[in-house]
Length: 277
Image (cartoon, rainbow, N blue to C red; front, side, top):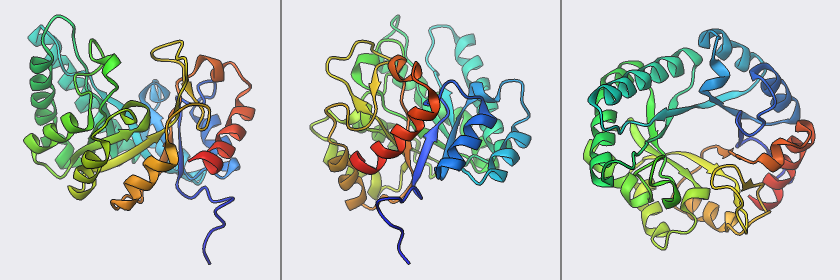
């Protein structure tokens, strides 16, 4: 029997950063009780915890662990900083394996003191340096292209095309893309690059929220689905037309929503997912 589309949360995943006020146990409990199917764990939720036990607890609650977020931030002017970043990404891969997450999401990084071209080279080299460990543990690495407004200090990968280009250079089945509509909705080449991504079997994750107008904070003013101007249904149709059938992950950074009572926010997420995603 097919699931009722009006109550089907079988593909719904929520990031722990979205419900920022809950610790990991609270998030897992509330997500499962609401009918959410998956969870993406942010690394700060693992601080001071054994990731193996955390993973067991999450699965016991009935949730699928979709990914660990985040690794990356490879570029730096100083070589020592680049080497430190590689070591940190190796720890993220090890934590993902212990947690039982199949994927680490990479926010790749940038530094304003050097060119984007150099930062992209350092990103490619950094991912390559972590690939042997990822391969030994069976962990996928998903490059998340960020909106160009973050090109100065958060990511030198600012379009789906640039993420695909890095994937082409690395040419490894464990390297793919985390596709976040907040960062990609504006791109006039989105349909072509989406087809390129999916046909290459590298669409590893799909994140949703909405773009507020006006945006009052470059990082922490993302909207609940349906509050903004992103064509969420159109983009979902585009990725699914090209063969994507994975989890749909709600990732919202919002000072406005974080101030609201979290149980009410989760209820709003469920309704927005059904109505606008």
